[in-house]
Length: 465
Ligand code: AMP
Ligand code: ZN
Image 1 (tube, rainbow, N blue to C red):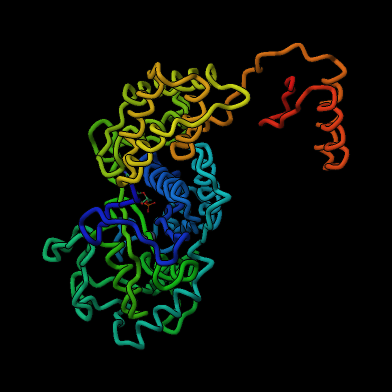
Image 2 (image 1 turned 120 degrees about the vertical axis):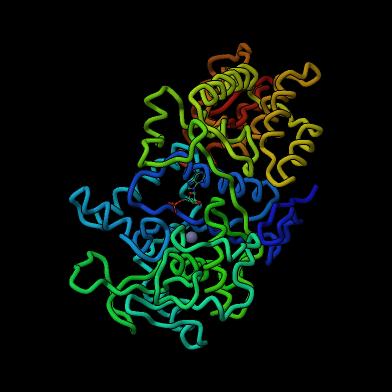
């Protein structure tokens, strides 16, 4: 079954067709690095990772970008109030840069322990892309989409009839005082800041000169500027949590499409929220959990990842210790089966199960059904243990539970004469030294004596011919 994805822009599942065949461009809204990412934030990146892996399963190469917001994201997500990074710097008595560097490193560490391969991702910081943001605002200014107030340069949403198309936002519902706060100088409630002036008489740590005055970029413009810099003016996929649909992502679309006159993104994907004990994650009430808290509770980050996979990404999840500990028990069982069944040489993937698995993941990343299928396979007496383990390894290219790192049990040992083993060891040394000629010569010698040497993960194996 070909891959289909739920596109927030269309409000339904759609067949996935990339702009360029075999290649996908994807941008994931990244963290604001003023604090540790909580486990709800991390759900957004595990979801993006699963999406990447499913795209790779479908033989696409993926260019993936995650931004690091290190300036301009205000407390409350609007245009007024304090900058989250500057506020945190004040509280922790550090510089804004120290705060951003510390929490960026913490974020990269968190995603690593969740088995997200950082080396495949382009990370870009807002403060490294100020010129790009300024020139995008200039392009908007030239086309008449901006106006200036006493505190900044704003985007005039009334100039764009399609404003709010993502998620069919009810604009009258975006009341001032909630996410879009009251500002008497704004022409329309939904207008938003592109560039903010540094407040008079107040020294900000992070500000830059601009054609409009000293200040800093708005939160939305960084995502438009960086995504288009790395992925082009139109790209395939943009993701984030559902909280970003009404304001942040509609603003990104407005800025980008007004500046370029082209469609910005083809597929918008949003993951549902993670709540803790039935309530919204909120630092103010202490209802927050970080990766290190999980570890302190004896929950492995990979068990947390497994637990996330038990639900569809568009389903709201409710974190409780019991539910995640239950997932951990299941994961340990799965790993134990896998180790028991894993053999050298590896068995064959079971084609029926692989097909069914593909149908589930290609149906808008239905990891919940793919995991249920995994347990069907585990219990299936009609599939040999070696083939089960081979099939599980294939499934794990999507799940990312790191099964391939599990120990390989010693193969059933044949009585191999010691001189043959010695030769095989010599060959292994030659291979490690990249002396392929010698390695081949020793292999020929081994075969002439009636044995075969095979390279397997973590070493070699010798069998009689
Ligand atoms: P932020 O650092 O606030 O910009 O958020 C980073 C990412 O986490 C964004 O994609 C948000 O939409 C997402 N996010 C924030 N809170 C949650 C939550 N409780 N559950 C799932 N995703 C979330
Ligand atoms: Zn963003």
